[in-house]
Length: 303
Image (cartoon, rainbow, N blue to C red; front, top):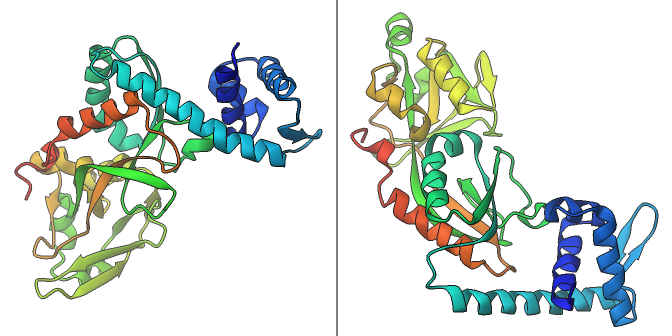
């Protein structure tokens, strides 16, 4: 193994937080990763990582080598991408983290088409609503919905995300339709626990905000479950349209308080700011932008 490969392994050790995690991400034996690090340190005649039985940390030489090795590896990747940029086929591995409900419902077809176009590319996809650490866990990019508060990542807008308040016809017939945001306080509501503050934000035609504290009998961290509970008549749901769009079209759910504006956000493809975006990741992002276009297909006819 040459020095470039040893650099890549060293970078993965640093960014993943240890030899064990690096071995998992690289699909190598822990002993092999440890040996590559030892070979690199022997080649350089200095310690890069100070290891004890419980912890490890970069030496001063290790910090300097990491910063410069990162630039070298990124330059090589950029050079290789420039040479092969016009080739149709991608190869290697693309690691992507996507939200569970959105990923299954609306990214499956995109991954299907992309995999057929690039049969030599290995796709490793993590479906989860948790916010992954892309560097530590070895992801090339992630798909995130909502405001981006992490200054250490770069992002590209993929598709707009709209919200709707709705309930089943049976529920509204039994409990009445809310006429103002204040009315929601006397209704059963279905609460998405991923929204930590539990506040629904509605804006009237004059631009005044009406925050509503969401509390109810049923709390869950999955939007598809809450949609089904709403269809079954358990209350009012505040949901992104990509979850409830089919239920709205089929009449299983009915919008309420339509004269009020609800939050409007975006879904993004994100990647670490200090990392070179690989050609295969860039091609996939371009593919997603083209796949969804300017208007989300699930919103057609809803607004």
